[in-house]
Length: 241
Image (tube, helix red, strand yellow):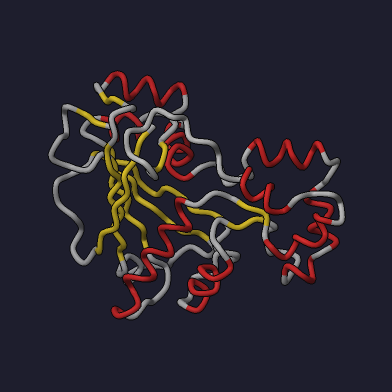
């Protein structure tokens, strides 16, 4: 993605309000792992592999279907695809943003966000800054904040291809998960995850249990600036539509 209006700043700035205490020497790995979590695709957890294979499901094929196929228009291999809703696409057009030319998302991690206030339980809060004027339009429009979050981070569901594969096998994933609660580790543990068990364990050891943070909320949408918040480390990723 590119925009003529804001060529000197990243297309999207994402501020992650870190809800746990992370020692300085562990932050680089923590940030990479948390970014993998935010930009990951939902996959069925490996604890359900045996139960699904008993139903005739090829677990490896199911995992491959969990990654949506690329649209084939992005100039940068491995980029995060930013697929807007119809309403969000109209906002982009209005501001002259070309969704097929590449761009970048810059993520910063704010470790002192809750020093003077109470952090929400089970929620990872995020602030999003968009190109000049775009953030203002999104913030003023009902529902567009959710559209931006979905375009960046997905809709927290298995891909349609994976769901279709399970339906074709007559598999009710929720019913299987209910039978396998012991394997999953509890009745409130989701049957999908965005990260590998290894990254999951690392984040949990760092105080961020992805099973307990069942949602991430956009607290604020605003226009991007050329400066970063004090104390915020940065992680960047190429983006495309």
